Image: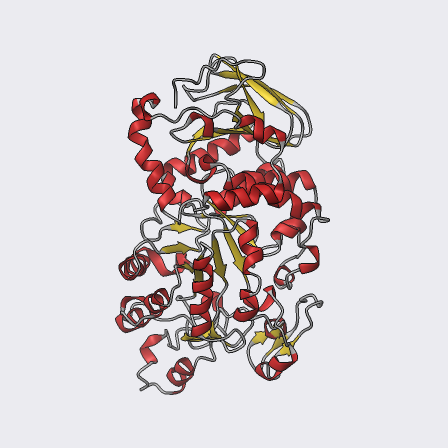
Length: 539
């Protein structure tokens, strides 16, 4: 979680708008004597959520090769033999042609030279953004640049460094109160893996049963993920394979956790299935209690926990994108989000990662041209339950189409306050860091006819946040139900990014939300010109 000193540093760096200051000018006493019976019962729930780093964390995703240029690029050239290419940092990835000799596309062999040591030089930048978790795309020994084709899970690709570099990175992150999550690719390996090559060539090999090698697979003679020749699937039905990957004390999963890694994001987790995911997650938790296992699961998020701690929440992503593109109404988007939380459970959703773009999609700045749409989408991402997952450069408004364009080198030239997108994202990060309800609060859908309207709340009324979103091209007037018994009658709530206020009357708010606008509202505990406050005996 983000400590008080870090919140203060963020506030100094960004400057709190007058609205934020007014909304928090006189908080309630916080005396437990004024807590309601429900709040006394719920207090421990919120404290437990705050103690669990996996809940509501801000996650920052990095492709090591593309994030930070090494100190001496030329000194690394020998690590990229032909047909691999070492590019200059200013070059943009472009789709290449099929290389039949190695059975991959040529753009999969384009490298930019980033490594774990160069990444460590940028940790202050990541920390100062307000990030809680650094998530790395695969770093294990592999042939391609994306490294989803592992040759040896136990080794780090030499272009990136060594296991000692992983330990040093984890130690540095922990010293800055951040966590490290690695990408686990345990459904398939790489065609160039020595074990696979031996198994393919020798029917009597001890590794033959580590893969699905059989003439029934007519394309390649083995089962490959999505029939991609370079990605032979591993035989998880073989207990020895599972022992090597996650069950054994010296397995890949458990070994890296002992090296200081804090969790795993599992590639194509839906292919691994409920039973093996449960085994992996239990093994991780046994080795490192409180570690995180998040699955790349594009499906509806119900039922996948506790097989994993959380999912990559693509379902929420699609709701948000459909909303800002006006394919669904605000009211319907709210019902979809509410149903998701009810079906999957609030805390599993809070441990799930909410993403709007990543290495497999177009970047949001390319997918959505209009500023208001991007800002509304990001604001929803940062205010609904879950852990916002930022793909490196998203905070800078980096552009990028489909793979490989979305995997371009980090645009460090955009990381300055002359970049409006960067300034906006820092404010959004600050909003999240300084509002407890957005990180660990309960979620309630608010009745509305036309708006996306929801509330995040804790056991302290002053921490309540209400979000109202109007993605339409016309002003919306609506009567919104305010489902919070401690928000006092005739008291105003203030938007955190503008002068807009709403007034609550008898548990309802008659609101006007301009076109293409999202409001993030907090109660004004102190009313201007009044020494009296109706909040004096509530918590």
